[in-house]
Amino acid sequence: MKIGLIGNYGATNAGDEAILRAILNSHSEHEWVVFSANPKETESELGTKSVALFPLGFRSCTKHGFKKSMKALRSVDAVVLGGGGLMQDEYLFACFLWAWQLFWVKFFSKPYFIYSTGVGPLKTWIGRRLTKWVYQDAVGITVRDASSYNTLHRLGLPDDNVEITADPAFLFKSVEHEQARTPHTYIISLRPWLKYNTKIINIFTNYLLKLKEEKGAKFVFVCMQRIKEHDHRVIDPILKRVNGTLLIPKNYSELLQAMRQAEFAIGMRYHFLIAAILTQTPALAVSYSHKVDSLYKYSVLEPYHLSLADLTEEHLEKKMKRLSVDYNNIKLYQKRRLEDFKELAEKNKEYFDGFIKTLTPSGETVKVSEPNSTREHSRQNNSDNQ
Image (cartoon, rainbow, N blue to C red; front, side, top):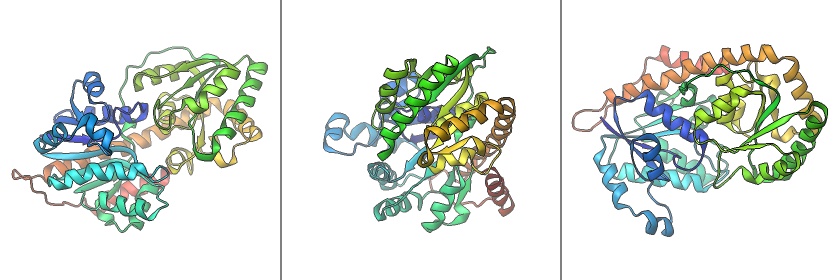
């Protein structure tokens, strides 16, 4: 079957590229057309046909145009809106961008499935309205955490059409190389976030200089996104003061390779922290969002979680000392969490295959509900893991 895949691809975000690869690998029996912000790069990297996202704005229209995108959309049997925290109004433009993509999907009456997305925060009326409009006509929906499920519930989406799973990146496959970790090496992912940028820069600069003086620590800074909310805005000022290596991973496998060499990780980016769990690298999560909370809070990893609002040099040092003391236990905790998340991520395959089965030869769809016992089991597992 020929399927269009729409998401935040080709936008220099290593986490979203991990989602893309995981979805394609999980459903390689289908022919895919990826709608990307950089179709040439996406096609070159993956060997999969790619076209531009439907442009939003005059300059984008003149640069890309609609013709190829429309032709590609009309050629597919179904569409997937795939992964990532697409509908959130901290940056309201995102809601308009993804609603615009779905406008054309609905215009051409293409059945669509929403695949393990994050939803929210939604603080504005227009953000909530656009999100409900995007989700309400989906044949099937999976979300990657309980908070996203609850947000859709509050918007009035039918509970029986929304399933809690986990991020596709938990199924990311890479070649593992056995190697010794380098003592006192810290791999770090920071991102700009609204009013907190100066706070992030000052606190991490002071703490890392102290680590360098006391332990001879070495630092690898990971830039997970290079455009829009690009990570350089907070990484570069710190890097100038503490020195270290800057890693801009070409792909998620390169990040995992670097992660396996580090002794500790400190991260804000969601998929950076998933990489730490995948490689069992003891990591402190500095949380700016419910999606980061979903990885650590209400679980055995909660002691290694620090809210951005509570970030101080004292709290950071205290949490990192505990990370060091609990080093070997954390690896076991991460392994346990990974097993739970993988089981949930595998559910995406089941629900997506169920969606495919609803497609008739004429392209029409019939909604098929999962047995209540299966749905409740999935939600209970996720609640236990949060």
